[in-house]
Amino acid sequence: MLMQVAEFERLFRQAASLDVDKNDLKRLSDFLRDRLYDLLVVAERNAKYNGRDIISEPDLPLTRGLQESLQAFRRLDTRLALTPVLESMAALPPLDLEMAEEVRALLPELAGALVVAYAKVLKELDPALKNPEPAHHERAERIFRLLL
Image 1 (cartoon, rainbow, N blue to C red):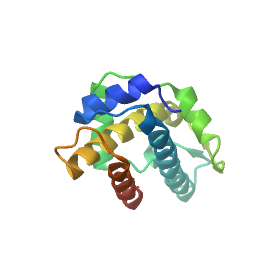
Image 2 (image 1 turned 60 degrees about the vertical axis):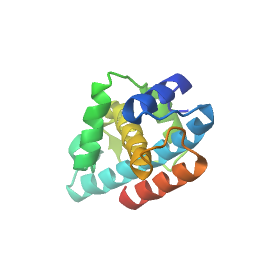
Image 3 (image 1 turned 60 degrees about the horizontal axis):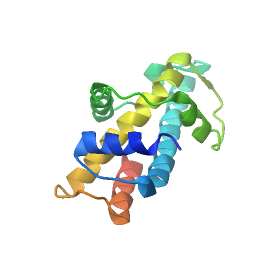
Image 4 (image 1 turned 120 degrees about the vertical axis):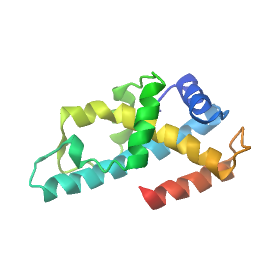
């Protein structure tokens, strides 16, 4: 898992006043792992296009919205550990290029930014939502797959 249940619950509560539980954690961990990988695949392509043999921070396709979610996550003053992020991604196909240390260090914050964005998308889909059901998660995941 990318984060502890308590961290997960607190982030959703702080980001969008949503109550989630440990049953949602596996689903979200898989979602985060896959979206982080998607970002890195595009970053790898950008690095190769620019003639680099390492993925650096400017290679990451951070949209304005994702940058704003990153800033919102940082304001929550929450720290996620790097090791669980890297361990979860180890199950995916390896990238051709290595990540620069600053990219590796940024991965937990990017995971946090994706949690913030995901929680806000759930709230946008249903402003009265308090406890997301599987159908809410499915809709949010489809939206992210379209955009990331």
